[in-house]
Length: 82
Image (tube, rainbow, N blue to C red):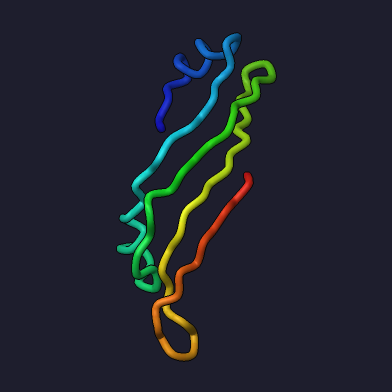
């Protein structure tokens, strides 16, 4: 999910729709509390205003975190609108 500025500008009139799955397993190395994280599904659109591109995204996935009391694995689903 990387686009150059030229690629974004080329999609200006046709519109840009995002429907991707991203592997973010490297987050486990950044934060030791994350025991597991599923591939994240990213969907959304891009809105163009002049030379500005604004993305309206929905980011969904599940991660496994330790319970704060028992340290047992807890599945924590997330669904973020940004």
